[in-house]
Image (cartoon, rainbow, N blue to C red; front, side, top):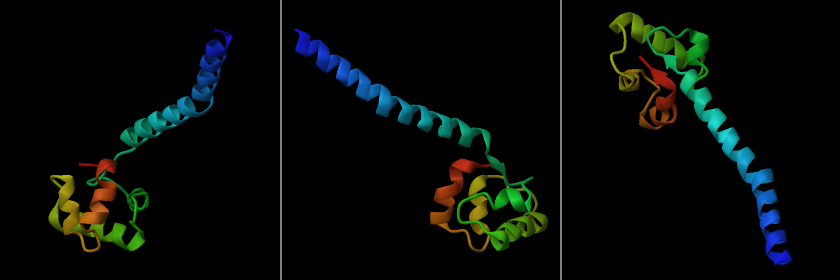
Length: 98
């Protein structure tokens, strides 16, 4: 009986030391990304550069595209900007809004 209690306590300790902090970190990152979505229609050059695989040149192309064609109606339209393909879009789609 004592052995069973000891195993239960050891298991609880392992959970509290390793699993729970990982879950908390994952939850914090999920909440953070939802709060920090970048609006393609209002984002500055600096804000656009926070997106994965977007440097200063591509960020400027996004702004230029927006000036020439008007606001983006849906986030998928960003793939019309030179330098942003399906793979790049897949990495950033959860960070975008219009």
